Length: 82
Image (cartoon, rainbow, N blue to C red; front, side, top):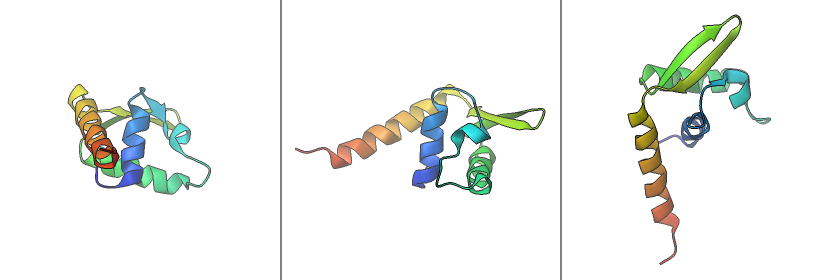
């Protein structure tokens, strides 16, 4: 979760399951996003399923969503003005 781009992908998946193509931004390469998703899957933070030629990802469990929310809240505190 220390990588901002992997964190962005996790945050996008908080809204529910998405296809890899839906997670790619204009400046991203599909292969780069796929590698990031694979790393998150390898860390058991994501579940994936294949449907024909598409791969869909979702957060592995509710505790991953809580962990993500805590990390984002902590990051926001760091930049909050006193």
